[in-house]
Image (cartoon, rainbow, N blue to C red; front, side, top):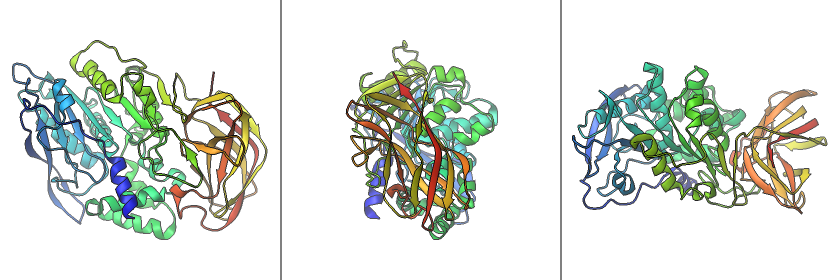
Length: 496
């Protein structure tokens, strides 16, 4: 448990920029009043505490844009004098936030609920707008961007979408979220099968911050092996998926950086944000960068592979430089030099970079019938095609599925190897398929993890099917059984 908790905190942390030069003044530390806490564990008034970093060049006569920054899950704001040098040197102010339930801020963590964390961000923006050295688009409307990863990416969407829901627009002018989510329910429990390894680590990493609902839901999930209805309701509003379902979109440029080998918030979550959460105009001015990293816990069953790195950002000078140029273009009016807007820039599992206009499948391959045990057993790999070939995007499996047993679950992903025995899952990700009842056969469409890979000559592309996965420990099938797939086809995003 201690190892998992340490890995959780490390994976959710995004290292703040290096120490600033001496000429930048020390930060101001202030707390702003926000909406009261309603949870019975800590009801009452709530203050959200922030550290305000002003660049030495900023003044009422020379106002500058501001970036909001926040921490990962279980962390706290960056408050030390001398932090955020690269942003301050570039002429940005920075406001680092202790989110509700963390650091010096009060209340309990509602995990980016619009009614709580969304409102908290609005109060922080109001404070930023009151600073006389901040550039404005108009009264009360600061020139504003945001940075941060994981939970520190979630606050960006929470704040921007909460403003859109309330007023029809957001005061953010650009966002740069890293390794964050589109839907927490789909991330934490895809197909209502719980990513227990991650959920347990996340729960342990912030025990004091949880609401009473979270404590009760975690206990229920452990006992039943199901994703509790209380958790589904608790997380339903807490991400872009909720706002998209309500017809809302963001009309601002967004730099999305996502880990393709991330086995908590995988590439699929960023694709959904890129494709669904932005207006067409915003998407044409936004970027999606996929890299091998993020929340990437080691996994053994099934074995996967990915060369760590961020090759696509490296081709644009590295992510830090890319992010600064993106922010400069959208907040400071710098000439547009960043490339790849409106496209998917994806690092391959082998270490390359491909840029594509679509992640949709382009080719269909037929497979033989597949029989897998459920609840117990070993992974198997079914050959799809021989290399050389390249895939980049979102594959889909179609089959008539029959089950022998109740609540059968199996896990699926693409893999590469010289034979079924050597095939390893591309970028370490599988997704579950769940059949609750016993039935003789029903047509199903099964989403597979989005990937990018180059299969060389001498190797083959496989479909890996496994009854168990170490990312879903104890949340495989509740009783032993079997799952038969007939009339199987896989739709692949093959790239020339």
